[in-house]
Length: 291
Image (cartoon, rainbow, N blue to C red; front, side):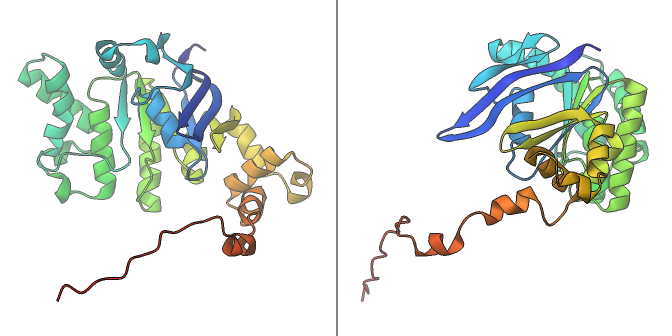
């Protein structure tokens, strides 16, 4: 299966901090790849590189064979036409109706007649089940409906790739499950490649074809959903003999309170840190009365 996205030895350094450390992964056309990991592991930074808003310190990212870091602004704008993004908050414009939000990319990036744009908007809203709410404003709809409206806007230009940033964040379990089913339905109907950043494991195991686990900027494992699921369900007696990286992944997948992740957090010596003199604080000057 050809790769829609190719990431090779991706490194990103901010000052003295290495946020992404040698990530290599292929995302195949038509599949759903879930990027998962704990807070601060590099998920959002990786996503920002995939959409071209950040450039690598070293390494390469190719979308359909085009290396993002070698493109000028006009070339990057052209490549961005290949994908749509569902932002975590929906990122709708509050002063516009749902229909106007979905129409915006079509008005900005095409020369289609207004009548054709109206038809396209109705089609996209029907895909996400919001056609009857087209004239409402974001303040008049629920959080789940905002996510669906954001997805309709992401679909406006018929992208080949859809990026989802925490699509289940802030949603109740039923609404989250509805969003998962909508994503699966759109992938099946439209054949798009989906890249989903999430730490919601119920959602991840529902939608994923393959998954990549990040930890401290490294890709610990890239594998199929079934193989990750087998690791998640492995009995504790067998898991004890696994390498530390696999035990760390298993703890994250299961949400266990004990394991390598919590052991690593507990490894810092609180008493030593508390009594150390390494942290210097500037003295606060006394306040001098003005009268």
